Amino acid sequence: MSKAAPNMLHLHQTPSVNRPTLILALSGWMDGGDVSTGTVERLVGLFDAEVIADIDPEEFYIYNLPGSMELSAMFRPHIEIEEGIIQRNEFPTNQFYCHEAGDLLFFIGKEPNMRWRQFGDCIFDFSTRLGVQRIIFVGSFGGTVPHTREPRMFATGCDDERLTMLEQYDVRRTGYSGPGSFISYMMTRAPDEAMEMFSLIAEIPSYLHGRNPTCIEAVTRRLAKILQLPLDLDTLRTASTEWELEMSRMLDGNEEVQQRIRELEENYDNELIGLPPRERDPGEEGDVAFDNDLF
Image (cartoon, rainbow, N blue to C red; front, side, top):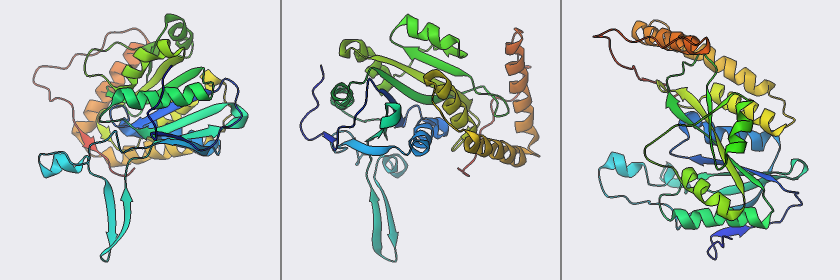
C-alpha cells in the first residue's frame, strides 16, 4: 500500500462515497488539444464537483532549466504584470474533486518532471483512503484522423478482461513502443495497489494545435457510455460543431492543406470498409502543419 510523503498530499475533507471511480487528467505529454484536461474540466463543471484535496507541487517540477530562453520558458511559472504591479504568479496545481452523488472523483494536474514514484504514492494514497476501485486516465495523441471525422479511441490497461469489455464501445487496444508517460508508469503499479486502471485515449488531428472541442466532446460521450453517466452533452455538441465550422473556414483557400485532409478522409473511410490506405505518390509533399491559436 502506498504511503504519501508527509505534507505532499493534503486531504481537506473526506466525502461519503462508495467504491468510487477516479478520473485523471494531466497536462503535458498526452494532453494534445487539451483533451485530457479539457475533458475532466468539463466533467467537473457539469457535475459541479468540489475540491477536496491537492498535491503540493514543490517537490515535482523543474522551474529553472538551464538552456535557451525558449526552452527555459516552457518550465518557468507564468506571471502577469499590469502597470508594474504583479497580478498573478501561477505555479502548477494538482487538485482532486468529488461528486458524491455519482461516486465520482476527479484529478486535474500536471505530469511531474521529477519523483514519479512519490507523485504516484500521493494518487494511490488518496485512492486507498477513499476506497477507489477504478482509475481512468483520459488523454490524446496526434495521429492521422482528419478533423472532419469522429476521432478513433484507444485503450491501455492492466488486464485483458477490461480491454475486451471496452471493445464493445469501439475502443481499440493500443500498440506502441517509445518514450513512456507517467500514466504508463502508474499502470505498472496499479495491480500491486489492488486497483483497476485503464486509459481512454483519443487520436486527434496532428495538423491542428490548440484546444479541440470535437475530441473533448467525443471522449466525454464515450466515457459517459462506459460509466453510464447521466450527462447532458448538448453544450459540448454545440461547441464541437462551431469549432468544426471555424476550422473549415480557416482552412478554406489553402489547397495544400485541403488536399492533405482529403487524403486523410479517404484513408479513414477506406479503413471503415476494410480497404487498404491510399499510398502517396512519389514526390508528394509530407504532412502539413497548421497551427490554430483560437482555443
